[in-house]
Length: 209
Image (cartoon, rainbow, N blue to C red; front, top):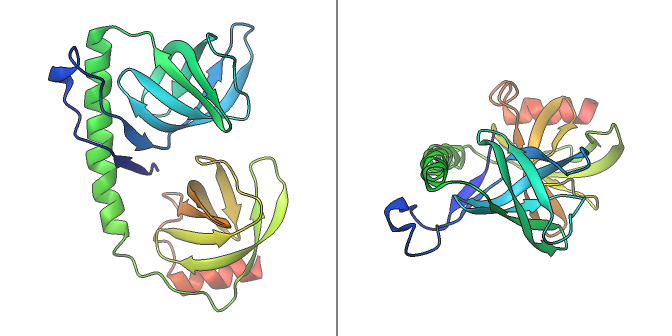
């Protein structure tokens, strides 16, 4: 599952005359350094020529890396900028590859924006039982408070904010962290969990876990 927001329609025909438009999208991935070490990451936004990446490990500017992103595959490039939560990379790709990336990003944006619009129609309810347990990818357990729930996901209040793109479990439900907000985060249920129970049933399951 991805969550994205298109900043402007992609127009690859103008790619030689101006910078490509960027698309906000969370795609899980990993990157490899020259020493062969691999590190997990998640995209923040992507254009056919560059990307902003969220990661705990932030390579210095000028570092060459190999980046693998879900649905986009392998991309090579150089770190252009480092910021608090990650870094920006400029891709070393041909014009033909940029056009293919533009097509892939357009397809993902059109598909996921429609999917997000549909999911916004899902009724969100405030759970009667708000206390739940969060299980992180490394097995760490933390208590959290459920803000609201729908068939597609949860709003969670938590002092600890898992990285965007990470997969966690709350109660019996697995999901991917798709956004942060002040004091918490939004979780989108995994495909095999979404729609499996009504919101009230999900809350009951969370409370009993």
